[in-house]
Amino acid sequence: MKPKKALIAGATGLVGNELLHILLEAQEYATVTAIVRRPLSIQHPKLNEVIIDFDHLEEYSEHMAVDDVFCCLGTTIKKAKTKAAMKKIDADYPLALAKLTQKLGATHFLLISSMNANPHSKIWYSQMKGKLEEELETVPFETISILHPSLLLGQRNEFRLGEKIGASIFQALSFLFTGPLLKLKAIEGRQVAKSMYSIAQINKQGVMIYPSDYLQNRITT
Ligand SMILES: NC(=O)c1ccc[n+]([C@@H]2O[C@H](COP(=O)([O-])OP(=O)(O)OC[C@H]3O[C@@H](n4cnc5c(N)ncnc54)[C@H](OP(=O)(O)O)[C@@H]3O)[C@@H](O)[C@H]2O)c1
Image 1: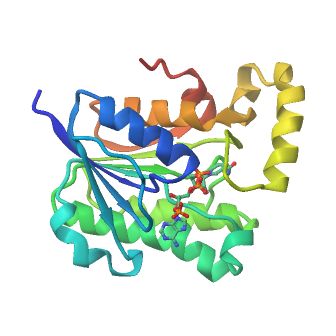
Image 2: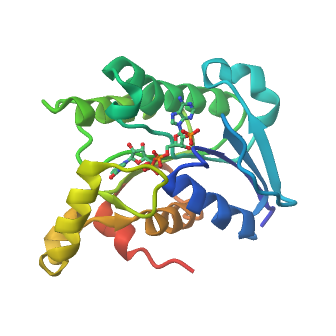
C-alpha cells in the first residue's frame, strides 16, 4: 500500500502527543504534519511541524493536503475562561479543519470527542461536543471516525483538580467497571492514541462512533 500523509492537530496535548510519536514510527505514514501554536521541541525525518494561527487555517493550506486527519484539540473552561472561547477551540477549530482538509483531498477525519456527546444534552459541554459531531458528519469525507473516550488518565503539565479526583475514584473502584460498565471506566490517554492510530487503518466508509470500551479493548500493536 502507498504510504499515507497524516496531519495532527493538538500534538502538544495528552492524547495528541502520544499519537504524534506513534504516527512518526508507523510504516503507514510517509509524513506527519503537526499543526501547533507552539514548538514541539522534537525532530524527526518524517515530521513537518507548522506553527500556525488557528484563526486563519486557510493561510496554511499548502501543508494540509493529506490523507488522514487526526484532531486532538481541546481545552478546559478554566483555561478558556468563557464558554464561547472554549467552543472556539473544542468545536469551531475542528470543524474548520475538517472542511478545509476535506476540500484539499483528505479522505479520513478522526476526532476525539467525548463519552456523553449529545446535541440534545442539557449539559453544555456534552451538547457542544454533540453539535460538533452533527456538523462534522455533513462534511463529505469517505470516512469519519469519532472517538468517545471516558475520563482521560495520564501525566499532564498542569493540575486539573476535577480530573484528579475523578481519576482517584475510578482507579480505586476500577474492579467495578467491567462488562457493560467498561465504557464508563477511565482510560489512559496513551490507549486512546493507540486506538486512534489503529482505527485509521480500518477500511470502512461512512461515520463510525467508537465508545470508550471499544477503545479500551482495541487490539493495538
Ligand atoms: N480530559 C478528559 O478527561 C477528557 C475526556 C473525554 C474527552 N476529552 C476530549 O479529548 C480531547 C483531547 O483531550 P486531551 O486531554 O488530550 O487535550 P489536552 O491535553 O488539553 O490538549 C489539547 C490540545 O489542544 C491544543 N489547544 C488548546 N487551545 C488551543 C488554541 N487556542 N489554539 C490551538 N491549539 C490549542 C493544545 O495546545 P497547547 O499545548 O498549545 O495548549 C493541545 O495540543 C479534547 O477534545 C477533550 O475535550 C477529554
